Length: 52
Image (tube, rainbow, N blue to C red; front, side, top):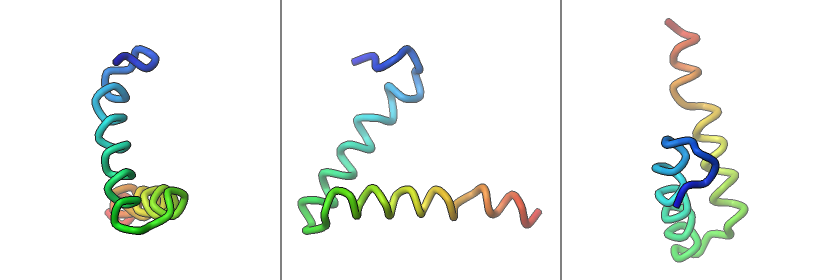
């Protein structure tokens, strides 16, 4: 299922959709799950790199 020719996107997209679906099944609103994922990415390894 090629999205736009980016292999990483093709690999990650179904995994992210599955993770979002699992969050919704757990009772969280889809937009909340997505917001938390974005927050985790914003506060993830990039911040660690700034400390080094």
